[in-house]
Amino acid sequence: MTAFLVRRLCWMLVTLWVVFTVSFFLMRSVPGGPYDSERALEPEIEANIRKEYNLDLPLSQQYWLKLRQMASGELGSSMKKDYTVNRLVAEGLPVSAALGLLALAIAFSVGLVAGVVSAVFRGGVADVGLMAIATVGIALPNFVVAGFAIILFVFTLGWLPAAGWGSLEQLVLPALCLGAPYAAYVARIARTGMLDVLGQDHIRTARAKGLSPFTVVAKHALPTALLPVVSFLGPAVAGILTGSPVIENIFAIPGLGWHFVQAAIDKDYPIAMGLVLLYTTLLYTMNLIVDLLYGVLDPRVEWR
Image (cartoon, rainbow, N blue to C red; front, side, top):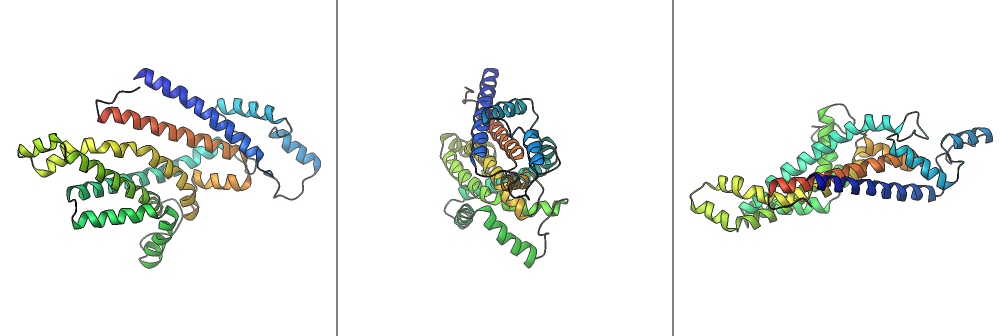
């Protein structure tokens, strides 16, 4: 296992370097700059700003200086705001993490229950109804779900606030909108996995021993059926991270996603670059955790 972790960490460093390189040159190739939308600056002021952020240097020198800065853990300072990227991450990451974790909890708890119920009552009303809802949930992106949810829960029923941050009530609606499409995916995956497991020999043996249906499903079938659901954890985290900027903008949540959108609009290179690398690290870490969980849930799986 140690060799597996060392190998994966080395690949993580390579991945981060490739992402950094591609992102750096793509950002510099886009026409315009962070100060194009501002009023005309005095030549001396503009020269000082370019020198402050090393924009007066050749592109190759900018690349190596930025790479060395990133490797030291210092993500730089914003070109448009009066704060460092490290401070932005320290303030925005807990907000995005709270939203993402609640969205994941909703997606996997609701989706898993729906999938297991559909598999156990295969062909029944519950199965058809739940899978129909799951199909609709997959077809609708989270910003469309957010529009319907705001109309229903805010304007029609008045149960939840429309936007903002600071209370649990303000977190519920965006987390529900962010996690709903992934709950639909989890439901379909869990149903397929459970149907496959319920037809295996050890399940028939457990039923022949007179065990209760709940014990058969919960103790003997569910652990094996969880494997495809766990494997979806990595893509789900990726989707929630890439979907959170939209949701955070809709509900005015001051998380990393909101800052990422603003950095793209402002062409704020340090913030955009820092958040791209942070997202890459989080995604790679989640995929590593998924691989480790595979070995825990199924002893036949070897870490290679």
